[in-house]
Image (cartoon, rainbow, N blue to C red; front, side, top):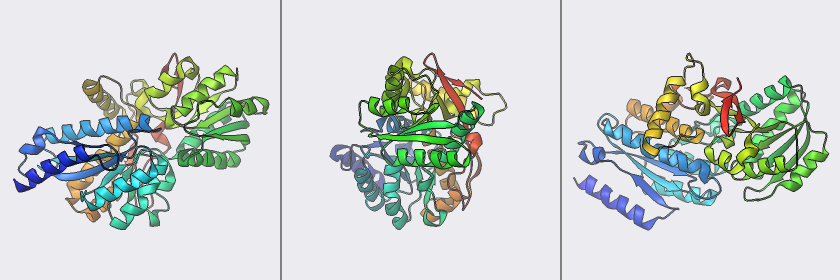
Length: 393
């Protein structure tokens, strides 16, 4: 009873005080009725600021799955309590949040952050504290080199897979000259850098590389250079709203070449902001957006359809790919805690030994050399038609 009373008081203080960004905690009736002590998990997401379109669905998903799990009895009778912090899309706020979860809340593990930059920012903190962390961002740098990322895992498909899918599409179309536009942050640098490196190895010429800031509201100047270049296609590495603005500017200039985006646009926000300009955009994407179009023998299809149904029942909207990254992070962690109990080191070991986990983002096979665990089969190419996602392959 003392433990429960303490937690109630603590959670109330968190909500009132805010601290590192707006703090929110999910509790459920099942947790308060449980006989066993709760397991506390932390989450740091970019639920406000420029990356809010990623963090908001991730937050909603975590709140939903915690409620679902606790309604079924939690983990072997232990309810899960989630302490969820908003880093405001800021790397410095992410570090403050990580220190708070590690030192004050004593969480078993941390899910987050939503972006590459905010995820990389907390790697040192969780590594020194020896707390397992599952990022929901894309860069392989978050989990490599393995020798320096012993405590770090991730659920989003690596940018290498994205680049491979883009290059395969360009080669299929016989396109050799490409322009690259990227947002000037860790996500854009990693995505564009990976693409440019793989393009050179595959005989694709990057004839122009232009950058813009995440908060820019007009990229016409960069696209005018694309129009004047010999490029036959344009590849963009950004998330909304910047990715949507680039798309609208691209159409406004009358550019007729193929427009490719990365998986950072995998949400409704991109379609809403880009409007009709989004039609014709091609992008590598997780399978969630086109789940109903997958063949019945796809190993993920049933997981995807159930997740979509559960999410729509609770929130009355379709989940985004970012929702799926959070779903996978949570259940990878739950499975690890089931095996290891409330021991951080044993949880880390269990995560690393995960094989054959069929998630929303793909089928995970972790190892000591691979803390991402996803292969090229975790993504498909999609095209926007009439404001909707359509499977290309």
